[in-house]
Image 1 (spheres, rainbow, N blue to C red):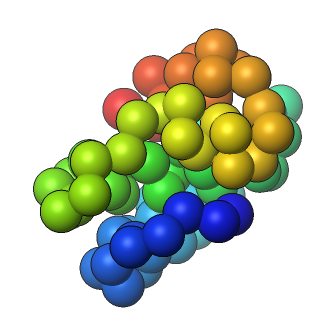
Image 2 (image 1 turned 180 degrees about the vertical axis):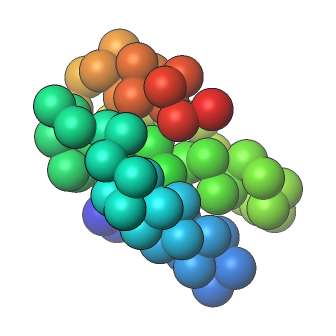
Image 3 (image 1 turned 60 degrees about the vertical axis):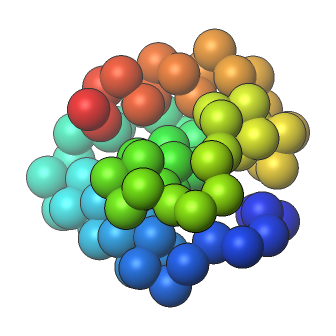
Length: 77
């Protein structure tokens, strides 16, 4: 994923969300890259990143539909 200016806290937070979702198997049936992007987006929102990212930025980075990522994000939230 190529998004500039992501802080280490946001990256680590995204990894933590992803690991917890995998451990609990809540995201079964979704593509891993969609779950990873949604976790990173969620971490950016909770860390209040200096650079404001939109969900469409993450969908462009992984060449996925913003609607698919939105479904995953809503399930994560």
